[in-house]
Image (cartoon, rainbow, N blue to C red; front, side):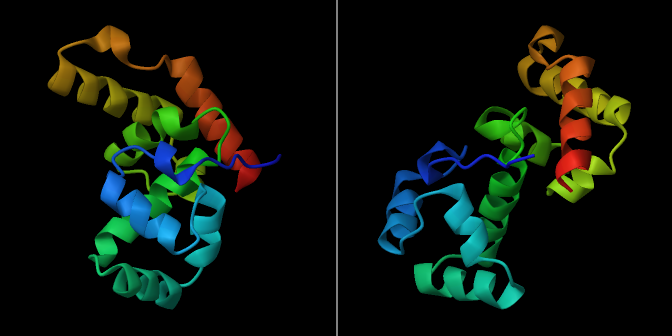
Length: 134
């Protein structure tokens, strides 16, 4: 299964300033970000080069990793990260029912709307796709 590649600007929560910093360092796609940060040292070096806290880079890496899944993409990667899942291998190990409950709880707490949460079938698809990619 091929993984998806997105424009860096499509990642949720990435400020325009951070997009410009990444673009200035030849990181324009999620795939380029993942390639540029394959080791802890590379991640730390990128944060130092951008003069930002390494936690930002870690967050972007997690979002880019999750967005590799076609069923997740940039639409749901932030939601999954907000539920405590930070990588495709971690998603592959997560029981889909438990993740769905966390997502529903998050939607109810923040938006007071259970109906906006993805269905259990969609969450099951994310986990299955993660297992195939991981």
